[in-house]
Amino acid sequence: MDYTDYSGSSDYSNYSGSSDDPDETCDKTSVIEFGAVFTVVLFSIVVILSLLGNLMVIVVLAKYENLKALTNAFILNLAASDLFFTAALPFWAYNHVHAWTLGEHACKTATFVFYVGFYSSGILLILMTAHRYVAVMSPLSNLVSTTGSGSVAACAAVWAASTLAASPSFVTSAVVEERCHFSSSYWELWVVYQQNALFALSSVVFVFCYSQIMCRLLRPTAQRRKNKTLKLIFTLTAVFFVGWAPYNIVIFLQTLNTRNPQPVAPKVLLAACEASRRLDYAFYVTRLFAFSHCCLNPVFYVFVGVKFKNHLMKMLKGWGRRNSSLRNRQSRLTITSLTSGEEVVM
Image (cartoon, rainbow, N blue to C red):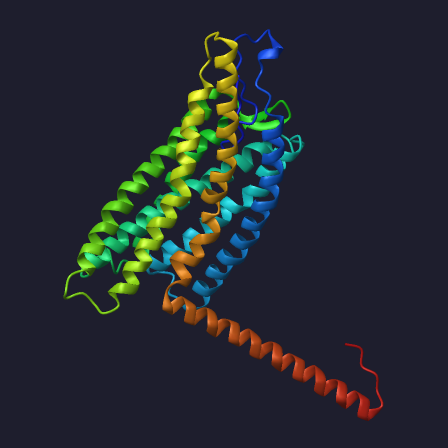
């Protein structure tokens, strides 16, 4: 049976016409070694950037913005969602390189946290896109100015739906052959098709909403800043599809390999094995682009806004003034101690 870890990879799949003949097993040692190095190095960078970016978003929002407004509530929860997603990545990388020694409860928890972050991020991006669509097409709608209990209820619904969607991963994940995997290929397929469905829904919402927004902004009566807005919309859409489309295609194609093959000729078996290796290499590369979205969200959904950039600059300048004031105070204390003949240990 082919087991898959909670990141969706199939490191141990094989194509065997007869399970009793070891010569027909597809050797993927080189693929696994590539995945281990590629995963640890590049996703370490993703984790660091995601932590810095999303924590900065939360600090800026808490310090300068009204968190009861629906837009700010969505952005805050998106940052929290990306942090959930990021928190699981070190465990996922550990699972690639070493045998899982953290116990079954840790395996279930890491898997669950990973998918809660994954699904909540996707749902929030859909809602943020729909909210932007309503704001442009019907600016006087009550949804645009939703605050207080309405925004809390919307965010609570997002987390409830994400928890429900991620719950099978908690129940079915287990330590199998010293790795954190799903316990059966059925649940492996279920989770992959769930991811594909979320991507398909996101794509429909993105294409519909952003195409309608662009048509509205292209009208002669649109605001003067429409060019900048159109570029931003195009960038958001392009980054989303470039990041997620190849990954979803690859994981879907990998599910076709989980079916038990019939005995075939050695040449056909060799060709299938080579195709499987190429697909696995593609999986590692496309997954990097997809998962790096957690550190790109703060850039594209927050800091591209003039208001948030101003808040960030104001906060950084405030920190700089405080540090400068502290250094000046320490210098005055040092000068005073030297002139008075006293020794002050800083």
